Amino acid sequence: MVIPTELSKSHHYSTAPMPTKPNFRIRHFSCFADGFLYLGGACLGFLLVWSLWSLAGSTLTHTFDPASAVRAAASSGSQKCVQENPAVDLRYDPPEPTFYDDPELSYSLGRPIKNWDEKRKEWLKQHPSFAAGARDRVVMVTGSQTKPCKNHMGDHLLLRFFKNKVDYCRIHGYDIFYNNVLLHPNMPSYWAKLPVVKAAMLAHPEAEWIWWVDSDAAFTDMEFKLPLRRYDYKNHNLVVHGWARLIYEDKSWTALNAGVFLIRNCQWSMDFMDTWAKMGPMSPDYPKWGQIQRSVFKDKLFPESDDQSALIYLLYKDRGLMDKIYLEGGYYFEGYWVEILPTYDNITEKYTEIEREDGKLRRRHAEKVSEQYAAFREPHLKEAGNAKGSWRRPFITHFTGCQPCSGDHNQMYGGDTCWNGMVKALNFADNQVLRKYGFVRPDLLDSNTVNETPFDYPEEGPW
Image (cartoon, rainbow, N blue to C red; front, side, top):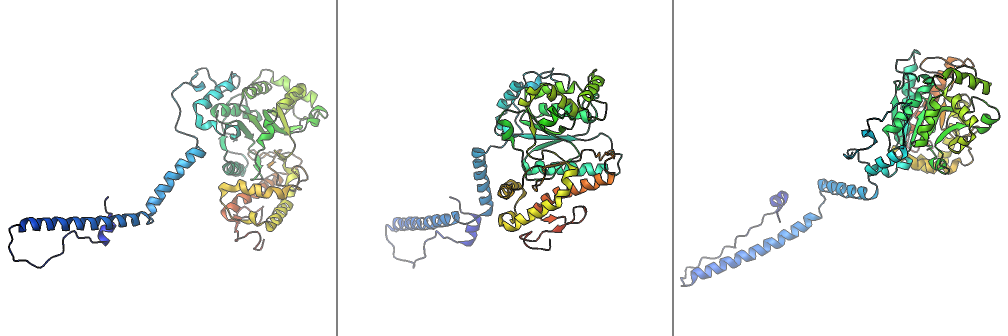
């Protein structure tokens, strides 16, 4: 055992024997006697020092050493983490070939992918750290134009819309990809999303779902999480906000909204997107498809074939697709901003009232555990509803008819109505994020002013 430096400085041990009175009597065995005496004294001293040393070592073992404690905790914690919840290994890619090594692989639409389910399954087998949790893994995809916006505040609004999506993904542990370049030269405008989604499926074999969200859509309930088990129940592969009655009875081109959709990363989806894309501008039959859509959907106002009308047409012509496409109408998977915006103030009052009644919801907490507090809030929302007329926060507020980058908008409302509405929606959502950082905006139309929230907010304070 080695005595620590600190101990050697604070304690002094001597192994020398105690001095004795001089003895001048000479004996023949004095050398041997003195030798034995010296050895005995040395042994006794050694035993004394050893016992004290052991006691000191034992005491030192129970003395708190911050550096040692941190190292021990880190070692213990890492071992426990590996055993219970292994993290994905971002630095492991085995040398064995995968589908990426196939020179015929193409990320572009028009070049079909075959046996994707098997290829993806094999990739997950070769990357076992990604296999756990793959069923619930989501990658959000969004994007905007390549060039700067014509609208003087367009780039600022797009930045805030993107921040909103990043906030939501960070809170719920989703990855996000933002694209601002055409991945297929003949698929511009609203058709540009399909090439990006296909590329994302190939780039993320670890993800079960790819979630396209238009740039002009804002998450306005930062706590709500996708009910993925609902879509697993009957193995649906595509989720959009829509209503079957409007497809098959009213034959309306607004029967669903293709600006937000969730698509499973599987072979069915690959094939379906190829079929969907054949009604787009990459097809030589593109002009014909616009005419066909207008002949079926009498309320369609413009002649070009668009992605939304194309999707509705496919469902209209083949009702069997409903086995794989889920029309979500149970909550605001995306909601029309004109009907949602006026509800924000009442919703804020309702949620504030709930928090005044439930101390758990007023407790300050780390952003990383936000989902637990969403679960705490859920019992209070049973009577709120979850769609039109609800006082629950709308999941996604979608500014259809408003184009923040170009500045164009539906003539039903003025441009300022669009831009001010976007500011209000984004601030409504951002307040939910800022609460975790100790601040809120008191006025949803004033982006610049924030107030620090007092302890036990909103129970106390002039709010």
